[in-house]
Image (tube, rainbow, N blue to C red; front, side, top):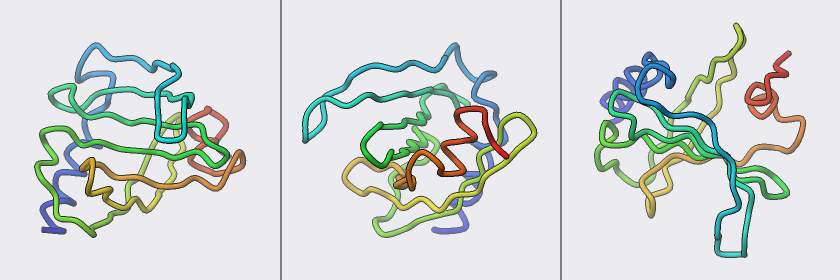
Length: 123
């Protein structure tokens, strides 16, 4: 299963979000178990059904939903994902959140390298 996940991941990451569907970054307040939280998201992938979401808690949480291309994944798996922007890249280990069938990672805070990349401030 891990090799199939790697292939799906590479296929999704090889397809730029901007070319897949008419999606753009959006930000809005969304309901969460603890109340309302600011969430930024963008969609993409071959069918426009993959989503990258950033929930702004004290320590931000990144979620990556592979969409239909991800299929139903086995609980307990994880993978390293490489995010690229502006000639920079950051690799982050994400774990499958079985309840929602998407990958998540807690970011370390405002100085997290992936958060800096998403802000356009990668070093």
